[in-house]
Structures are given as C-alpha cells and as structure tokens.
Image (cartoon, rainbow, N blue to C red):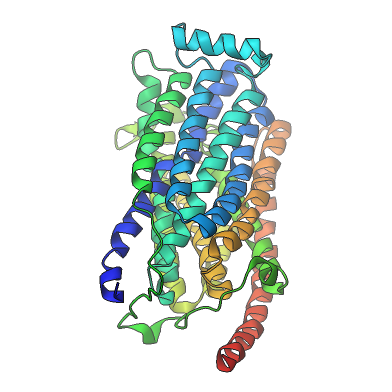
Length: 452
C-alpha cells in the first residue's frame, strides 16, 4: 500500500477514534447523579465522592493496561473490550441500586448477590465504587489508551497536537450529549437513577463496540505525507523511539508527570463539583435556565464544548509556539481563575469561570500526549503514555479528595480555591524546569539522529 492510498484511510480511523472516545466518556454524568444518590442513600460528601475518585484512578490504570495491550495486539479489540466494560459497569451500577424494579431480572440479580453474601453492596458507596468506579473506569481507560496511539500513527509528527486535540475533543464533547440524555432518563415517567445507569450502559456497549471495529493501526512501512506548510511547525522531525525503561530514566519524564498531576487535578475537582458549586454560589439556581435547560445541565454541556475547543485549539497552538509555552499560558489563566472563583456569584460570572476552567483543562489534557510522543516516539506510545497517564490517577487523589474533605468541614470551596491557585504556582515552576530539561534533551536527540 502506498502512502497516498494508506492516508486515504486516516480520516476514517480518526473519526472512529473520536466516536469511541465520545461514547465511553461518561465520567461527568456523575456530576448530575452524585447529589441525588447522596440524598437518597444518606451518603456523606466523602462517600459520594468515592466512586468518582475511583473511576478516575482506574481510568488511568486502564489506560496503562490498554496501552500496553494495544502495543502488542493492536487497538481494535482493546477498544471494543473497553466499550463493553464501560457498558457492563454502568448496567451493574443500575442493578446494584435496583435498576429494574421488582421484575424477574432484578429479583434474580438481588437474590444472586444475596446468595453470594454480597447484599451489603446494594445501594452502598462500596457497591457503586466497584461497579462504576472500578469496572467502568478500567473500560474507559482501555478505550482511551487504544484509540489515541492509533490515530497519531496515521498523521505526520507536526500534527500531533492537532490530532491529539481532535481525538481527546471527542472525549470532552461527550458531556454535551450525555447531560441532556441523562436528565431525560431521570425525569421521564418511571425514570430513576437506577434505570438511568442501566440504559446508558446498554447504549455505550453497543455503540462503542461497533465504532471500535474501524480503529486500526496503519500498515507496515506506512509513512504519513508531509504537510505543505511544515516550515512554521514547532515539531518537524519524526521522533526517536524509546521504551518505558529508557523513558523513566529521564528527568523530562518526572517533570512532565508531576506537572500533569498538578494541572489536571483542578479541572477534575471543578468539573466533578459543578452541581455543588452552583448550589452554593448561585442562590435560587433551581429557577435559572439557559436556552431552556437548567443551569447545572447547561454548565456541564457548556464546559464540555469549551473543553473540546480548548483541546483542539491548544493542540494546534502548541504545534506552532511549542508545548511548554502553551502550558504556561494555560497555567497562568487557571491560577487567576481560581483566585477569583469564590466571588463568581452571578450566572454570567459562573459561566465565565467554568468556561476558563474547561478551556485550561482541555489544553492540559492535549499537551502531555503530544509531549510524550515528541520525546519518546510512537512505537511504544501506548504503554509509554499509559505510564505518563498515571499522573491523572494521582491528580484524582489531590484536589478532588481535598475538596471533598474541606467541603465536609467548612461547607464551602474557598480554601480549596486558594490551595489550587497555589498549586498553579508550583506547576509554573515545574514547567520552567521542564523547558530547560527539554532543551538539553533535544540537543541529545539531535546528536542521536546525526549518528544514525
């Protein structure tokens, strides 16, 4: 197959990768469900936060495992398995909380768990943590960890930021679709939290499995065509390939990992608490609607759109001005936003604040896949980025856990905002150190290329 003919398949694979990510990304549905679940089951803020924290940790763990598997066996069936796991985790969450009422399937499931001695998980944070947090999280990671490497391999190195932004944009855009679907499932006649979990699971499993059949690596010997406007790109040369042992011996890896954990943590915390923050900072929020929908649903969908745009625009910008320069812009913007967020007590200001957080979060989640490919190549990208993505799991244990505990004690997010702003100062220092380390490493890579 010639490069030209092979490149004709690239848009098909890219589209499939975007759609798989869009389908499996049900993380932020939790923002709509956690308050109702907590009220219904009388959970504490820490208990209500446990499934979300675990789904983020196991999402990152699944990306590591899925990335390794797709490096060995290809992305198609790993992505398909991920979609099925997400669907199964959601359906199991529904069963655990009584999804099918008193029908024969629900009764049979209930009796089965009772016979195994697992009845305590029914309606408990532990049960939802295992189904939504562990199984669904692993499935999201399998899908995410297999589609991004596949898409990047079809395009020229100078396009890594843009292509990564597009694939990850599908991941972010999912909330635009899932927020109204979730609210419709909850509010329809006979609707419930339990049935919402169950029907979302069915849809995810079917659609993701079908889309995954189009996710493939390019054929052996394939080289992506060189863009016409290559002269203005920040990255122009094909990266050299390194395995995880070589990667983890470099200072660049550890600086990237620490920076990723800090900057991603704030976005995870803010998006996971959209409903709580809106209730606290917007009095009478129940009566506020935008474009005919409630303010909370609007914010979740709006943040998803802005997040998507941030990933695409940030990726494209970084292809031109460099990854670290783009990171510094986003870090500065996020620090200023966190310093002022406590005072965002009107609808326009709350929308603006969440828009800025969503855009920065999108930029951050595009920079580190691109940086990993730049520095360590695409041959072992699935596993390499899976290791890098464990920073996302660490991120889930920083600001989200901090916010849950401080909220339980203080009843607000003021101290959380201030700590997060301070975290951005640390992140900026790390990026300046990263710039220096990257400069030295790039000189080493140039010498390696000359000796090849």
